[in-house]
Length: 212
Image (cartoon, rainbow, N blue to C red; front, side, top):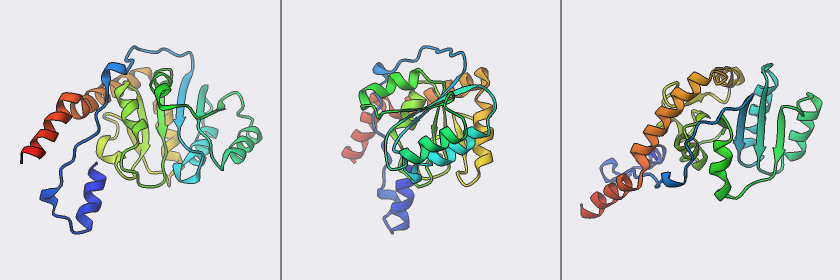
């Protein structure tokens, strides 16, 4: 990712010797049909640990009065704290904790939801969930940490927020209640990811590197 290139250059690696080639996304397995939910369905996929930003997400959701369902899929040491937060704030009808699922089921889960929130507090190269969400024409809301800011252009093909500012996440989620906004962003996200990660494109880029 662009983030990894940035780190390599910081460590004195010659920029001209670095090629960024993304992983292939298999679009034949994606389900791009339009999904109309009665209420906004929000998806979080990941570990229940502080660095993943799940507590920031919960605090933001607490501020949103509109109807929504947020499914949390994962496990981890914060499970008890998350459960207590949901109960304390009477959010049992809005936030649901689910067991971690195998990767083969992720695409179906993504398709069943309206938006994907990836609220990581730390720099990550590029979470697979972000690419899968975009490949399924979904609105992805993520942070300005690591590789996410290199793949998503804010309010163009996704939403980028500062995880140190809870209100930014609140406003980002509120924007996503507009189905027209979600559809516009989702279509642009799909096109960007397809252009970057389809099999033909990635193989072509690999061959260029090997031939040089």
